[in-house]
Length: 443
Image (tube, rainbow, N blue to C red):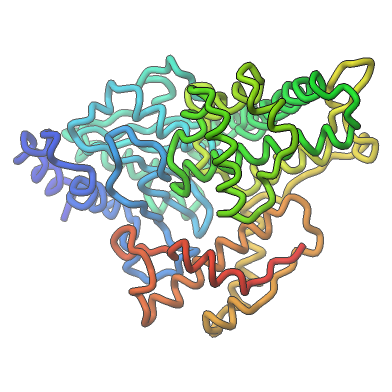
């Protein structure tokens, strides 16, 4: 099939495709998959690359609504395992050329993942967005939009589109050269800087709240309690965007100031995740107080207060959060609460290893180690990060082992897996919860 064939097919039944009954799953199969295959991408992994090196990652096609944003992007285009750009699909009845919601959604994905660009398309239109700028509530569909193509332009503009999005330009380095100016903007307003600054604001805010109730509290205890509260709500918020918890659960509690429901949720989460994150002291002072700053912190974890999509946070961003807690501490001085560098960190910076370096190291070590081993042998193995800091290495090992096991089960026991798209599978939660207990990740 050629671009011309694809355009003619769409044009011939356009009225039908523009009906709301024609859904996103059909659009992806009929038009977006073949369009990006024409750009050289192996959408269905016909070449049989291992899961951790697939060129394109696909998410489930069905969503609760046209604007659902709790899932990961529909398509993730990669250079080996490094994310280069996202594609968010909408059905043709959604006016992506003028509606701001889909544009803000794909920009939030790209901004959070620290990508230079991302793409939004309902096939009627294809839009390319600069993802280096923070997403604001008032942003229009045109904000940060680099290019917009109507389907009638695809044939004449195909070489231009190829030069921006094709497999070849990503794999030969031209992609990064094309968007190098955006790379500079990313350094000026990165998600790391904004989110970590916000977390530090929360630390002071919550520290002041707790100190007002417990003025005799020790500085070490204050830091531990503040960190435990912030860790717990960020953890649950990430779980919401990754479909492990119902979206907006925490926000609903905050809107209603339902402290009993939040306390129950923490108790349930403590049993479910068995992580020790939710055993909070001072719940009466921090949670049951309706005017507590803790409720404001929860509200700031959702758009438009938050410009992030927690479904695509990379391990180095989460690692940097940990480093922030390590590098600075709350201090109490004459009744004032403020952050100060820990004495041992005054003359040095703490830097988390970039994800692309971590993944390259793991390709040379973990992938080679697991080659030829059975699932039982892999799950019975131990993996150690001797110089563990943020835990970024262990998080990436955990994900890589899931990908390796998916490939192992694909050989003869596919029924164990959950199919999410064409030739795309993942491990069910129960397997990860039960079988991964045999696995040892050490720091």
